[in-house]
Length: 225
Image 1 (cartoon, rainbow, N blue to C red):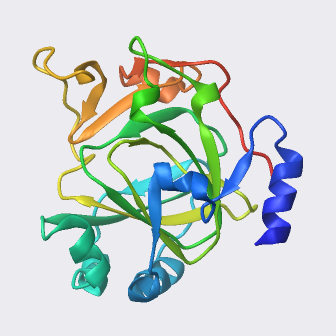
Image 2 (image 1 turned 90 degrees about the horizontal axis):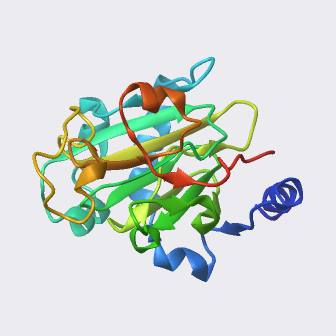
């Protein structure tokens, strides 16, 4: 891990890259035991592929859930609420947006990757500046919990072949486009999909076309490797 993170730090002087095992990550989540996720890692490694360009997000794959749904780690993280077991594979290298859910999320990193994170309390006057974002390198075969108060979005690749990452969330998350009915709740303007509140960077034209709220100021951070 040391060689890869040293290389990433050298090539990204515009943002300090922490290790997910550094104390700085404790604000955003925690590293979980990975042993119960090995069948999931093997499945995604063998039965899913990285698209030629862009990302592919699949919210739920029943076979994946069957492999790990009895996990002690999952039980203790979510407390037996119905869950979706999906994945995101791709080639992203930029911040592009930040989202949060009103629930934790488990990510199981099949490949090494970088996550760009901020805290919900970093949102001020209905916007966030990208200087508030922190970068975390996560090695392959690592599982983490991302807290509900953590702003996150797509992983960033750190190898030419892209990234693969499992995503476990309460069932229904990200499945339908919705909007707030009123203005209840501090962040209702960012409600974008079921259990998904999203702040977009204006350079992310795909989300602009989907009428996401442009609320990230500053640089659209890119991770080089």
